[in-house]
Image (tube, rainbow, N blue to C red):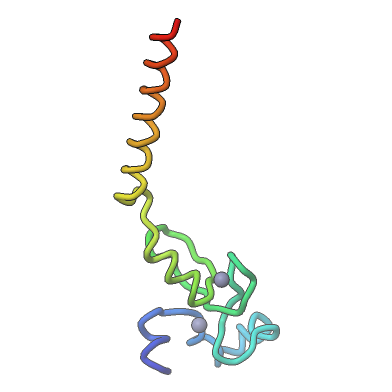
Length: 96
Ligand SMILES: [Zn+2]
Ligand SMILES: [Zn+2]
């Protein structure tokens, strides 16, 4: 087992398990799942922040790890949008 598989604790470790033979039938060596996002081969493992299991390719797993519900950027753009709307409302009212 490589250090990478240990770190991710994915189902690659189950490849030798005869009960999992059918599960791995369609999945090539070095992978243990099919990405839920893009359909590429990836790894099946626990979701980093929710109590579910899913499959992700390396790219989408990284994305999952870096994803935050509200980033500073989001807050800034939302605040900006609200400011624009307020301004528009004020302009419309002052015209009337
Ligand atoms: Zn794996
Ligand atoms: Zn993917």
